[in-house]
Length: 76
Image 1: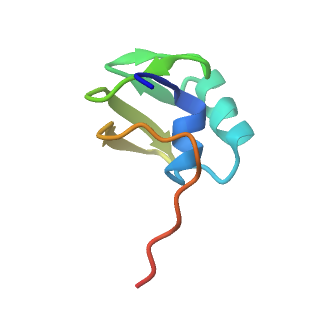
Image 2: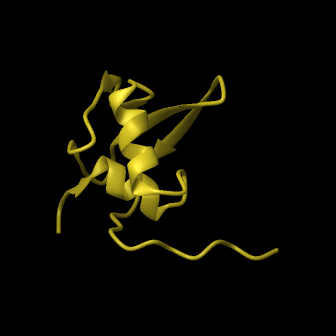
């Protein structure tokens, strides 16, 4: 696997609670990959930079690993 859908990846790393919420954010233009607005089906690869607008703030993420299944939350 060398690429994953951006909405699926954002759901898998727990940025959004549901995949449909990630899709909605992409449609609204709140997700940028390498500086460009993307659709939910856009493929991302290791090394890409994502900027996500959440509650008025930009969150910058770098893709280090491709995931399609949801990962567990870290327990403190």
